[in-house]
Length: 146
Image 1 (cartoon, rainbow, N blue to C red):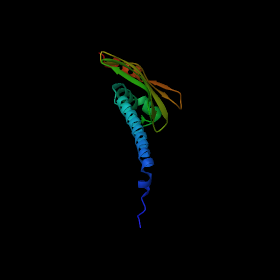
Image 2 (image 1 turned 90 degrees about the horizontal axis):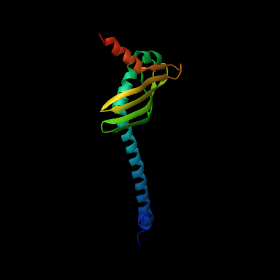
Image 3 (image 1 turned 135 degrees about the vertical axis):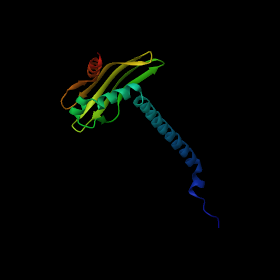
Image 4 (image 1 turned 120 degrees about the vertical axis):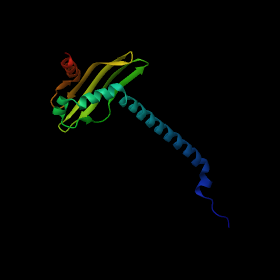
């Protein structure tokens, strides 16, 4: 009496290409996921992102309006582009606090390796207020002058 062949022995012609297709699909999905998170890390580790978020979450007016603590709330949108010593950044970052939500808006240019901020403010969703972080930074610098 002959032993019955296993399912794989009878169907290997169909199973092997199927595994190949599944392998390719998984490779593409994981590859795209790795590229997405790599780009996200590039942007969130960039100087404009780190600087802007630091200014927003430590700003007394933003803390008063949104509530303590202020933190990022989700995915930023926009872009950061760097070419040697020049570049540009134009993005928004959702923020949240105990009292509400806001959006951090950043527009900056990089010249000779230094970032110059054109816009840096927080729009508060509930009250439609705008907290201009650049204006407050300039006032702070002016107050330090003799």
